Image 1 (tube, helix red, strand yellow):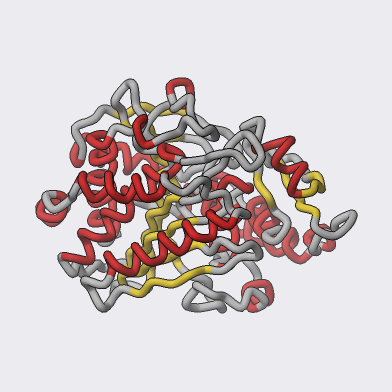
Image 2 (cartoon, rainbow, N blue to C red; image 1 turned 90 degrees about the horizontal axis):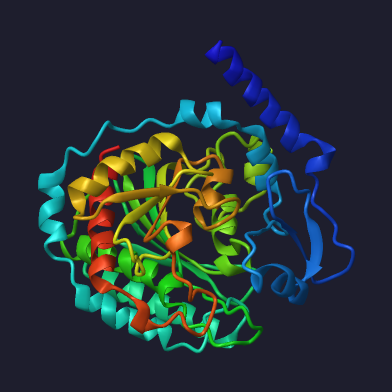
Length: 388
């Protein structure tokens, strides 16, 4: 039964992607964006101003599929059974002795300094001039911390807007990748408003930046390639992460589709890049319940279950679980691309920061001892993941 279901799904993938309905959508007029708010939503064309007014300002989850429409065909071709079949993870952590020396090198003060620098930008909104400057800051800081290990590569992943994403790679020996990610853009609920974006998401950025610094400093040699993705444009509908994941197409996509991608990041356009796991962290510094929240919708259940075993081993915090809905953060892009993805944050939705998407999401609201716990978790995951 399982084998026949798999072949049915593969056949469906070919039909969906090659069908006329998968052709590139045509906007009603130039400079319009196609956005959707659920899996079943066919999407609506809006201007950038309408996108902000109707979705961003009202804190409604949405995905902008204008330039990544092929991911929708791929997402429709895979169901939970296929995702569960393809993903397999250990029953728990087994490399604590390797991770412990790295965790001991984590610096809370580094994360405080970097968060201060990020929140000093008036806004990091993806279409703003200061958002472009923030991308330059992220790139330069990633290059700086990665320079301790000449084997690490750092690149900008350019998009249709003027805020590139940044990707650092520590090469492994397996030909597969394990990814940690966070978005660095910010937004306000008021057009052109101040958006320091402290918890959302300077806090997540400094976590993976500090993890990168430690693995670079120690010249850690992973089995799987370790990637650190700093995404732009998340607040605009997961723009940066969808572009990266669309570019790194799942092997389920037909070869002719993959060949059209002309990849800027993937290493093998004919096979796609093999991503064994992606863990996204979006908001790590505001937690009245002092927990690590693991979300359970639009994620890989096997990977999520594995992460639940890491939290009590690598942190001193309890686990809370919740759901966050369609398109709530960048893990959804990897999930749509068919990769095992998970989402970790600082709180459940009901108790998350009331200040996000406003001028009040400031440095002073952050708990750096809590952010440090996320950094410990991240090192633990990277070490364990390097052995997947």
